[in-house]
Amino acid sequence: MANAYQALLQSWRLKLSALGLSVFLWAVVQTEPRNQETFSAVPVEIQMADTAWAVSGPPMPATVELRLGGPAREIIRLAREGTSVRVPVGAITTTDTLITLRREWVQLGQRSGLSVESVSPSQVRVSFERAQTRLVPVSARVMGRVRDHLALAANFEVSPRLVRVRGPASRIDVLDSIPLAPFDLSEVTRSGAFTVRVDTTGLLGASVVPPTVTLGVRVEELVERVLDGVVVEAVAEPGEPPVLADPPTIEVRLAGARSIVNGFDPSRLRVWVAPELLQDMALTEERVVRLQIAGVPPLVTAVPETDRVTVRRAPEPVEGERPGNRS
Image (cartoon, rainbow, N blue to C red; front, top):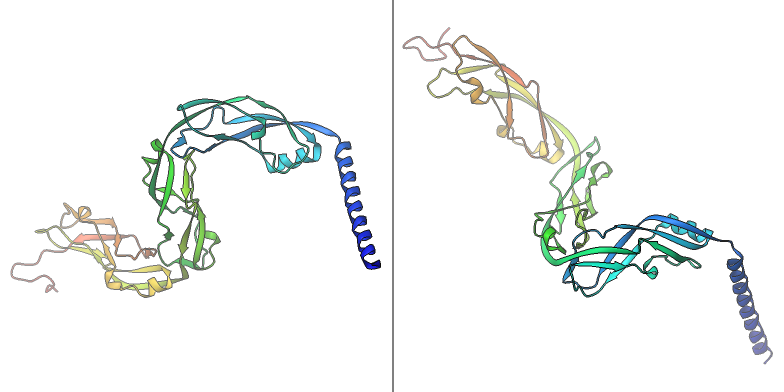
C-alpha cells in the first residue's frame, strides 16, 4: 500500500512539474516582444484539385507581399526557411478566374504566435486550360568532364526512358522530349547508377511521374594507343592520273576507355583526303591539303601526328611502261 501511495505521489509531482513548465513557457511567449515584418516577393502556388484542368500560365501577379506579426525569433526563422501562398482550386467553371487570397493559405509551418496581418495584392488572376497526359522520352544533359585518369566506356543509360507528363495541352502537345537536370561528370569517380531529377523548368502546371530517373554511367581507366604506318588515302577522280601523298603514312594516337581502345581493329581506321580537294590538279602542281579521319570508335579521340599532307600528281608512265617500273 505504501508503494502505491509513493507511486501516486511521484506521478502527481511529475504532472505538476509539467504544468509549471508549460505555464512558464506560455509566460515567456506572452512577454516576448512582438514584431511586424514585411515579406516581399512571396510566391503564389496554385494547387489543382480538378485533374481535368491545368494551370496554363503563372498567376498574375506571381508573387505577393505579406505583412506578418509575432515573436521576432519566429519571424526570423520563417524568413530563413521561406514561405508561400498555396491557393487550392476546386472545380473549374471558367478558364479565367480572379481569386481572392485568404490569410490561412499562407504557409507558416509550425511557427507558433505568427499571424498574417495583410496580403497585398489581395487578388490574383489565374488562367486554366484542359490537361493532357503523354509518355515523353527523357534526354540526359551533362556538364564538365570525367577526371583525367578516367574515360567513358559506354553511352549513358537512362531508366526509365519514358516518363508520364501531365499538364496544359498547349505545352504537352509540342514536347518531343523532356530534359534531365544537368549532371556533373566531374563528380564521377567510378561506374554507377545515379538518381537525376527531371527538369520541369518552363512546364508550369505540369507534373511528371516519376519525378526522377536513373542515369547509368560507365567509366574505365583512360589509356592511349599509338597506331603506326596508317596509310594516307588520296584517290584521284576516275580517268585522272594518280595522286601521291607526302608523307604516305602517318601515326595516329588513340585515347579512351581501356576496353574500347585495346579492342579496336586498326584496319577499320581510315585517313584520307577529300576528293574535291584533288580536283583540277595539274601534273606539276603540289597542294597542301587537310586530312580527314573516319572509323574512330565512339567515345575515343584520334589525334594524327599531322593534320595536313602534300599531294602531287604521279608522273605519267612512258608508253608501253606500266606505272611503278620507271627507274
